Length: 265
Ligand code: MF3
Ligand code: CO
Ligand code: CO
Image 1 (cartoon, helix red, strand yellow):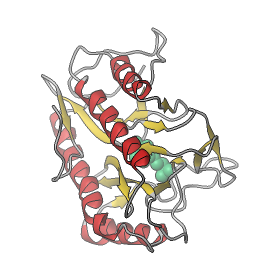
Image 2 (cartoon, helix red, strand yellow):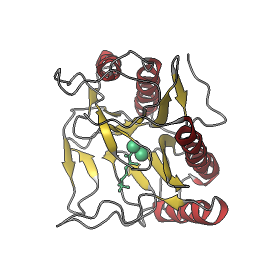
Image 3 (cartoon, helix red, strand yellow):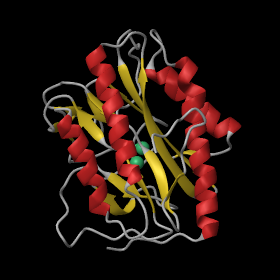
């Protein structure tokens, strides 16, 4: 595996990009309410990233490939049974929805990538629990990160916590190395799935995301005809939380930590 090790200068730039991505999530909070469309949320985030932060929204036109257009918007909005990569559109949010907003900004060539769940109005307790347990899965994964630990330790603790709550873990999408490149090695699995050959020992200077997608029902996903939107096959809800991390000399630094965020460790 070809995992890049970042210098302290690289990490300082990642810190800035990470903080900007986190600040977009802080900024958008007050706008996420019943009656607002995900297009309006996209527009507010786009303008904030471009005009206030003087940064670039990484998703816009990202990932064009033969037979698939680039991503058409500046953020991902994944509602209820959408697992990830939901495309903002004209549908209004309604009371009881759970919405993931995933922000990736590029500043001074470096990426910061983070997402969280927003509860729209009064959310059913079973959906609140799904969101909470998924955030706990992220935190348990982060708590494993330190030099000498293995990448596979992350997926193992995430899967254990999801299964203990009778949820399933999405396998088709994973966390990723990040830096000047949006998605680079290593792949960070959120389940117990490494063969000996793709596992790796964590070292100071690695930067990657952890972004578990946890389903209330079965783990299987389906890609919609737009080439991007991934939904649960059984149409039951899915939640996701994401941070960008750096492995430090003695542990981990969360580069996309929000001001209001209280860590359990
Ligand atoms: N932000 C997503 C991730 O966590 C990737 C979005 S790619 C897009 O890796 F093209 F869908 F925006
Ligand atoms: Co990511
Ligand atoms: Co993301």
